[in-house]
Image (cartoon, rainbow, N blue to C red; front, side, top):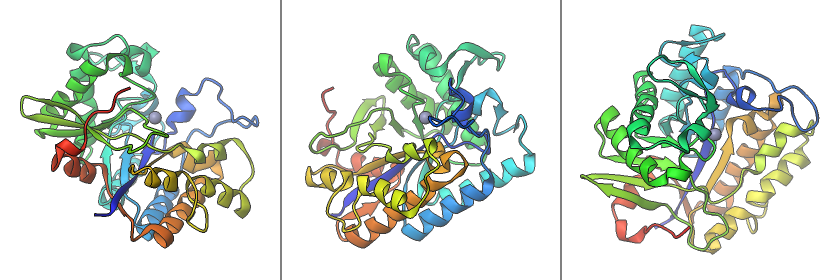
Length: 325
Ligand SMILES: [Zn+2]
């Protein structure tokens, strides 16, 4: 069997940059204002890359990005036509290869579910003191919005490290909320990184009342993030960043180290990393990494979506025990 490889894309939302909304600084490290929106053309370019390189993984859809409305009823400042075009593209070009899921509701301020109003604290801080009584409806709302928008989701991503202080309650709540929203008894989620450990793999996080929850960790770092904070966008720079994951000769890099340690390379980047504050250098890095993987590793690794990884784990649960943290 080839080793599964997958790419986590955190933080996408239609048009709106959730990074712009929640960033406290509001500017790049070299002092340029963060751009507030990304054009649909850049989602199309992302799709060109994943189709060209055969890349699969997990793609977040933040359903109430930055507390600016929601993807079913409309987003503040976003043309309905552009919203529909974004969702249609995710459905027809991203979803065949990537498992889609919410990254909670806003990736910004927590929401009062009764009124839809923003609370004063962000979702991460809010989650830290919650239990299943409040987490289940919150997660159910997030999963339901993504499904109501015409996408398909049986998994969630944790904005920041949402839920880590109450992980047991959080895991129970994801599993139950996914079943309530979709009827699915299997679910996946992404919260933890498992980096620089041998045999880093996903694990069965929870089995309860006939439901199963699989935790899929990132096993590398987001080296593409640095493209946000520089005007450099030359080919040497693109190649240097790609080298962190896999060198041009296919012999070194974080992906190679994970494979040598018998783990699964689960790459991670962010939508804002690929958008590079309007320079889109990150998309070029992704394309080059995908090219190098295809050139050097196609006999060793097989791209999988998070749902495919979930099914693989569930087909042989004993192989995927929970690691000790
Ligand atoms: Zn995020």
